[in-house]
Amino acid sequence: MNHVKYRIGKWLPSDRDFLNSWIEKKVNQAKNSQTPLNPAIADLRDAIYNDPILYMSFTSMYDEIPQGYNEPVKNFETMLLIMNQILQEAPCYSKIEDTIGLVGFPINAILDWAMGTSGGYLAFTNSVVNEKLSVILDEWKQFLQTSASQYVLVNGPVNQPQPDYTNPIGWFSPEALEAIAAMDPLRGQGNDPQDALANFIYNYQCQPDQPYFGFKSWDDFFTREFNPGIREVSPEDSDPSVIVNACESAPYNCVTNAMMRDKFWMKGQPYSLIDIMDNHPLAEQFGDNSTVYQAFLCAKTYHRWNSPVDGKIVAIQNVPGTYYAEAPVEGYDPAGPNDSQGYIAELAARALIFIQSDNEKIGLMCFVAIGMAEVSSCEITVNPGDYVRKGDPIGTFHFGGSTHCLIFRPGVNINFDFHGQTPSLNTYNIPVKARIGVVAD
Image 1 (cartoon, one colour):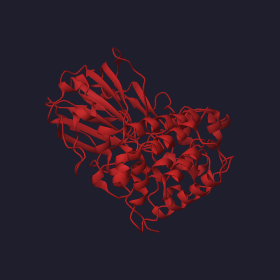
Image 2 (cartoon, helix red, strand yellow; image 1 turned 120 degrees about the vertical axis):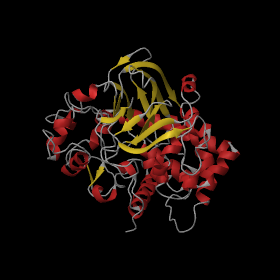
Image 3 (cartoon, helix red, strand yellow; image 1 turned 90 degrees about the horizontal axis):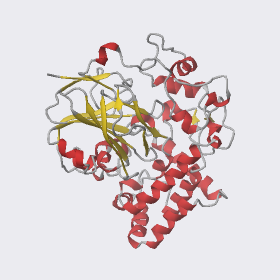
């Protein structure tokens, strides 16, 4: 098989042949389905047909895919049919997961090549399209919050057909639990069990003696919390100079020369702070040569956000944005969504949480949760005026994890601790609430 660049977080398979096979099955399933068109899908379809520029964009994105790329989806009508099918499905697990990868971004998968075309760029940066996509993804989110999505939370085969998956099984099957445990950076250390089932029960709040382990829905499982005493801030890290990891995440990038405004769409995708912060009034307190630390979340781990510092919540904001835009410099690289993480920090649907740290050497900082593709629902659970201790919950992603940033003002000198790694696309998780940096004098 022809393997391509590793896809961080394992949201999509690295093997293109397998992904094409999955899409082909999905195309056949959607075309043979009698499922009525969801009103949100119909609304996007009408918007495409009623706007000549959108019609041109959605038509050309498939026409522009070069010959030889073997894209199973040939037109936007098929794309919409597949999206319609997905809205009533929950992600299950494949027994060949360890070598192939979870199809955790099914809509992203069907847009994989189309996103890299000029037509795709025009379509997925269009505000009307993103408004329609927001409604569609909210429909899926609502389904994933119902008991109808519990069918994948079993040990053994799922109890409804999943013709697009190879050997589909539930998330409490040994193979799936092993994949979850494999992402635990503390597995086998101290009291953290090596055995996959014991590891899950030890780490996460669940009821293993109940159906579906006590989870009410896929979303309930996905946003699961650690048990009390797991992933707590250590006594030595309670020092005000210590910054802790806000998410269970792997370091992607860290720069100390981020500019207030920059050409974020160019090679290297530099950070443009005023764009990331959506022109928020507090952005003025940052400036050139700010520090940005960015890390990504894995498909199978903890998806909640926790405060990296002690301090007061000064402001919060949910920013609507794009869902399937990738950096134009990535072209047809199938790992383009991975490599677009810096770019989407400025464009994607995201949440901003400004925190005034108790430590004067830190002062005002900003936590940014960045939705990506299906991972686009950012729920902030704190309010302005709230006081948070380091490690306190501040929000969560729904169906997903994507990526996040910590932004510090110029002059805040941080000695970062990447836990023996160099930030890149091939790093492993640092535990949430673990030390990631110390503010220097």
